[in-house]
Figure: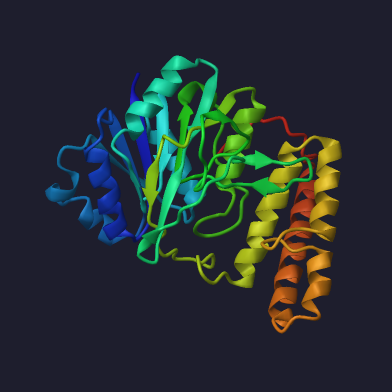
Length: 322
């Protein structure tokens, strides 16, 4: 079984070096490491010419001419040749048994289409500890339960995987690509959700095993979707992506339930009308109302875009071709 590792990167050379160093020390060596570099990112290209960084790695560089993570990931999928494609972020460092555990899981279960694991988040000089049993689920109302960075317990089936630590069987994604309709010029929020749902809806098993672990050092994003301070454009784009995905992958009844649940109730990230009403009595009300307006605008735009394209959001799971 050939294991390809795919790492999209953009202007984060220090973190990329840490990722590649971790890939060098795997108990089961990588058969292929594909680093996708965006055109114009000269600093990364210089970094990858340094033998101290790349020596010992079966490295291939793939160039992406378009902005955004979706284009980079699709370029990487076109370049890989492995039976299993293990994807991680440039600011993550897979633990030494990562590739070995991935190979063992796919060899043990021919129905396994995708495998994810815990990303141990390092921030403010420490590690974010915690434990959650419920991980990677999409409720009938469309609410996302992530918790991939806090999952504990045994391996179990899930609905969603996280981009920092997810692996796919090549046969499961042969006709699936990351969704090029998603908005954003950098992270393009929820692209991992759309991709993993496509694999699940195509009939493959998705599993989360917290022992398949990476250390995650969240680094700066060079777009509107800042980790600490999103712009309202980024909020609007994220809501657009979320609702586009939900209408694509949920069955008809659940699509409508999800639409009204987010419109009326929502979450802290995607506030609904209830949050807007509470904002009127808050000292931070203006900022929260601005977020609510951006979220609802993105949601309406996604619904309108699908209607105009003739899409019904049938949830076929066939994925979106690049």
